[in-house]
Each structure stands twice: as structure tokens, then as C-alpha cells.
Amino acid sequence: MRPLSGGGSGFIIAPDGFILTNSHVIHGASRILVSLADGRSFPARPVGDDPATDLAVLRTEAPDLTAAALGDSSSLRVGQLVIAIGNPYGFQATVTTGVVSALGRSLRARSGRLIDDVIQTDAALNPGSSGGPLVDSLGRVVGVNTAMIVPAQGISFAIALNTAAFVVGELIRNGRVRRSYIGLAGQNVVIDRRLVRFHGLTAETGVLVVSIEPDSPARHARLAERDVIVGFAGQPVAGIDDLHKKLTGERVGAATDLVVLRGREKVSLTMVPAEAASEGR
Image 1 (cartoon, rainbow, N blue to C red):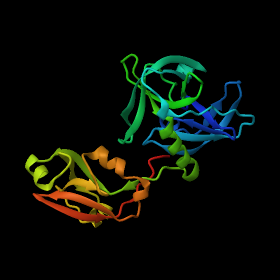
Image 2 (spheres, rainbow, N blue to C red):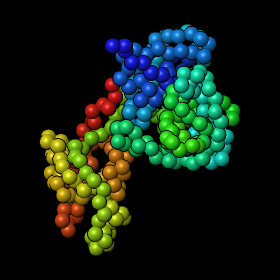
Image 3 (cartoon, rainbow, N blue to C red):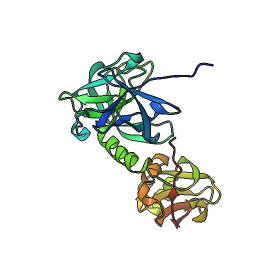
Image 4 (cartoon, rainbow, N blue to C red):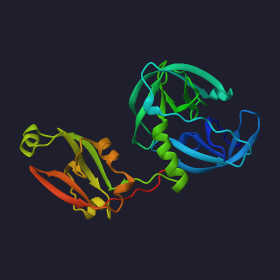
């Protein structure tokens, strides 16, 4: 049986060999080979992988590398010209142009978490473009091309470089991005308006606790099935995605206030989130 192979794109972010690409480009790979624009090829190894943002960092020992110029994605404006560079269908260094169609989009990663601050563009992407740079008219990288909608035309997405910069730092330092975990399954639910008014809630939705894992932070905090989570760390919780955003690495091991509706009563609990298991390789 012949081994399977695949391809994708990436770009050099530091002259000592660090390369940024998409997590799904390298997922499951037993061997990674990097082909450079000058025709040279070198093996690379994964430094860190974060499926929750679909980003990964590789490193190669190739000499004489030139890093891409990095820009500031927060300076982007709708209508601005952008250029996507990649290797669609194996055609190396293919360039497509477009404009920024929208900013601040959310895109769901394969892990189920939302990737925030995603750039929508009409620069054409095709299989193999994933992981390549999205650059502005001055050649500065402002995003990482990550997805397209099939069979829609002119709808492509890139992870904002400022988001990627944080993830890259974590992956290079720790090999992963730390996130906290509380150990429950939940679903979004609409709260009775009378309870919203009575308890002075700022959102009319919350997270209904469907099940709780044994020996989890949620179990230790005496959270119960059918509770509705409406507050975490002093902030309102309007749904599962909202709760995910608050489960940052800084919460690991820190006592955190949790507010739930238990029947018609509002109950305050104290929870100590644990570190989530790595979603990477």
C-alpha cells in the first residue's frame, strides 16, 4: 500500500527556520518536507500545533533563510487590497488578489472552538493554499490563509496575524497553547424572561449543563446537571462560545467565581479550572 501524501503552504517567520502554517496541513504527518521558493528542499519538524486556531509552527535547519515582513492586522480596513500567496494544487508561488470583504468574523475550528477576529476576503483560495500568507499592498503579512467555502465563490478566510502572533509565541515557548478546562457538556438555552428580570441578568441566554465529567473541576465545584451557567469570573456568560473564550490559560489553578441558575434560584459557586489536555499532536 502506497503511503499517502499531501501538500499545503506556509511562510518563514524567523530567519533561524521557524515556519508558520495551518494545523490541518501537518495533522497526522509522519514526515514533513519543506520546499523553498529557490528550489531547495529540507526536512522540517513540528514545534507546536494548535487545532483550536488551526495554526502550527514548524522548524527547518535550512541556511540563508529570509523571513517574511510581518504587518499589523488591526490596521486593516474593509475594501483594502490584499494578496494571497500559496501553492494551490501544487502550483508553487501562486498569487491571487482581492479585497478585505469583512473583518472580525468568527470561524469554527475542527476542535469545535471558535476562531475569533478572522479576515474575510475574496482573494481566491484553493486546496493547497492553506497556511500561506495574506499580505497587504506593501508586502507585509496580515493573515494566514485558512479556509474557503465550497462551492461559494469569492468567500475565503484568513486568521488575523495579531491572533497568530500570540499563538506562535505560545507554541515556540511551550509547544502548545494553554487553555483551562472545567469538564462539562452543555448547550445554549434561552432563560425565562421573568428570571432574567428578577435576577437582573444582562443576557437572556446561558449554558445548560447536560452532563458533568467525573473527578472534574465542575464536579468538585458541586455543579449539577440542569444548572444554567450565567456568569464566570465576574462576567456574564451568554453561551458555550462565550464560556470557551473565558477559559484562558490564566484561569488554570485559579479559584474562579461561577454563577448558575438552579431552578429559580441564583447560586454562586467557586471553581478551580484545570489545564485542558493538548488538542495537538
